[in-house]
Amino acid sequence: MSRRRISLRQELPLLVWLVIVWGALWQDFSPGNLLFGALLAVAVARLFYLPPVELSGRFNILFAIPFALVFLGKVAAASAQLLYLAVARGPRVTNAVVAVPLRSRQDLMVTATGHVISLIPGSLVVEVDRSTSTLYLHALNISSAQRVQALKQEVRSIEAGLIRIMGTKEELETLRMEAAA
Amino acid sequence: MMNFVLVVTAVIFSLAAAGAIVRISRGPSLLDRVLATDVLLAILGGALCVDMAVNRHLNNLMLVVAISVIGFIGSVTVARFVADRREQPNES
Amino acid sequence: MNPDPTSPDAWVDMLSAVFMIVGAIMSLGAAIGLLRFPDLLSRMHAATKPQVLGLFLLLASIGLQMRTWWVWPVLLVAWIFQLLTAPVSAHMVGRAGYRTKHLHRELLTSDELEAVVQKAAARAAREGGSDDGRGD
Image (cartoon, rainbow over the protein chains, first blue to last red):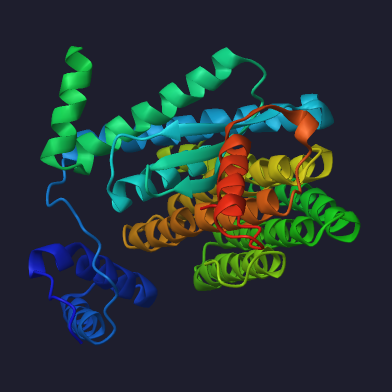
């Protein structure tokens, strides 16, 4: 096994998540159970390790909470809209496949953006071009070029939000330059 | 009031399950059927959730999680199979 | 049931009842979408997405009904599992659907992936004879 070891700091989110899952599965959050869960988590992470997820090492909770609330609001609004479309428009709905180039080159960032945009009803990642980090989205109810532009704008603003939460310093710098320009 | 809620959600879930079953039987392609099966599983999970909320127990919570995981594994497997059958075998 | 309609208990019951009914309607919306939308990829949208909100509301109503704090992490884990898996299965099925041409082209107002696929196919044809490559 020649893979380089990753530091404990980078592994910590995974371990914490495993402990939470352990506690949740037992439905028991007593210290003893959590300690045993932590031991198991370390053992599992040592024995069966996957390629490490490259975190940037920063996580801004101040941006994360509003982002989560806005996300929930968007999901609710878009679900209602989807319901309306299904009932009122039905078979006459028009779609589009849209290419959205992202700023970030990191796999984690591209994955997170794709996840969030897929969870919001009305858009779906069909294909990803990893070399240029371009997402190809299939979007529902796109009837004009303005709607395509609006969708691209929305995806890029979601990516900006994610960069503010957990992007690297360089990405934040690009974001700042873009805002200034 | 909880009985009223139970009746209303039971009717809604039954209608939804009927719709999904119609799509399973009619669906022109395999992928349509997989999709509808996924929805049927989600409806089952939702019904279990309502039962737990109304009767105030948590016995089936892990069953709900297991159902969603099974739906996920099933649709991913079938999607891969469908995609692979018509493509070059060396492409990942 | 508490007979006093203004007690917090009654309000919590009311809220969770609303959550349950809206969550059930989300499932119904998925089924209606499955039946009414014309092609696989639009059905995809209807099938996977409202479930996210639906399950969230149903789990929240369980949490409200149980009235103990320790169910919330359990419910959160159940929901996060769904958040992690739903887009992946949607992407896999959507990708397979796009590649096997399960969509109606006349319903698309624009297709920016089509040009890329064509270009990659042309390049693959130029480079290597029999391979009818689908560029990634």
